[in-house]
Image 1: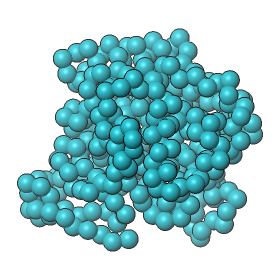
Image 2: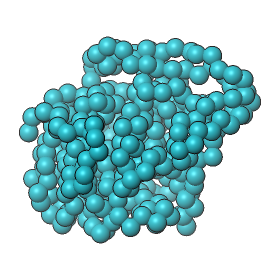
Image 3: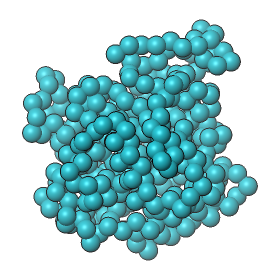
Image 4: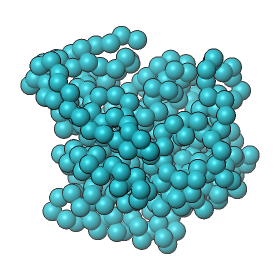
Amino acid sequence: MRQRNPAAPGGCPARPVIRSGQHGKANIALPPCTPGQASLPAKTSSAADTHSEAVAAAVAGVISSPAGLTGLRQSHIRWRRGMPTAKLSTGEIHYDVYGEGPPLLMVAGLGGLGAYWQPQIRQFSKDFRVIVHDHRGTGRSSRSEIDYSVGQMADDLLGLMDHLKLDKAHLVGHSTGGAIGQVLAIDHPERIDRLVLYATWTKCDAFMRRVFECRKALLKSPTAAEYISATAFFLFPDWWINQNAVMLDAADAASLPSFPSATIAASRCDAVMNFDREQDLGRISAPTLVLCAQDDFLTPAYFSRQLAQLIPGARLQIMPRGGHACSQVLPEEFIAAVLPFLHEDRPRPFGSVSQLYEGTN
């Protein structure tokens, strides 16, 4: 893959860098950069052409709901431009493609930003053609003022597959992305190869409804700051929040300028609460891995156990800790749990992960 070095609009400000420390703690630094220049990672496309959006895409999808805080552990925040667009009849979907190999759709949760997967992209793109996208209503995709639903989100992803001429792909979906994966595996089984349902749910119950009604109430504030600040409680374990308080403060500030309108955010919360394909789960034929952390507060582990019981032949993997965003909190453990499953039924390259993470079933 080529590396490109386009000039950043308006010059190149100092770029925050968060490097991994011990025990999941991240450290922030501000390295210098050459004015007007910024390096791009080696990949087939790029995104975000304003500083606040670039920072938000890299650190704060999880804060504007789930997306990539700890992706910064692996790389600098970079100026990125020219993110490709799928022009669907219903709106524009922005996406990124990394690596070569069998196609792998990595679908973010409610925050909707493809940057959520930054901690995994480098490893996964060694063996797969990784496709990430910003959900409609978020990031650089169309900010459509519509009644959102998981079915609509699945239709958008199907449109992106058609745009990329993908007949079939693996799918790893986090939370709302896992609900999208359920819809595609049920309604379009010929399009899904292997399926990973990560920290997702069957249908909204009384507990989950209370949580999301509370989150919607926060959107009634004059700004989204309260919603953004509270999101960490739903996604991360207490110990991780304590260890990464400075990074979370930076992510909160970075998220605010590009946060969706309150109307869009509330409608996307409604989409979560209205989702229910429980009666159809027995129709899923794709080999399925159901994965979550035992201390997931937002979609408790009982949801994953239900999914594994209702999907024929599904495999259940429960990590002892990590919260709702365990792929951010413990990225290496997440990779070790998912990558071997995706490699099954195909030759494994030399040096690939060969053992599943040992959680409790």
